[in-house]
Length: 116
Image 1: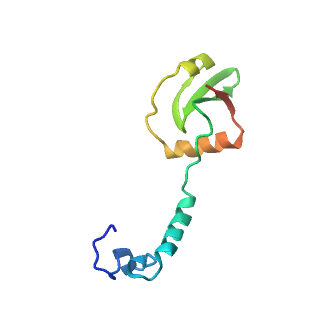
Image 2: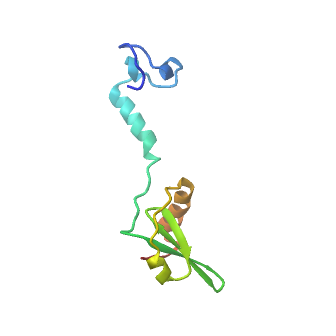
Image 3: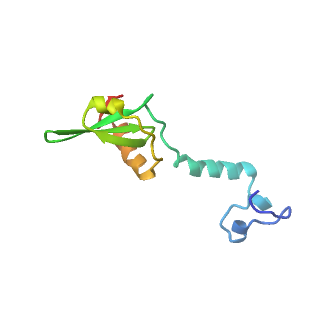
């Protein structure tokens, strides 16, 4: 539906042999849908596993820092739990690279997590 085509005419990608040709009936709409869903399955995001913000504790010798995260978004770093609970900022936006790092750290159970 993205290209205006005459019925039975191939789309641009089908002409280049880069699609299955659902536009001209070379594959069924169901086969196309199944292929699409199979491709998208690996791209899904994990749901945020907490009801609110959390603090990820990072220690370096005697120093301790708490990174505040909500809905896979970094909100800031503070030095105490009280500061972490008081931190009231809006995330600047979703960062895909940050998500990958956080997802691996949080879902693996290897991080020290404080529920805020």
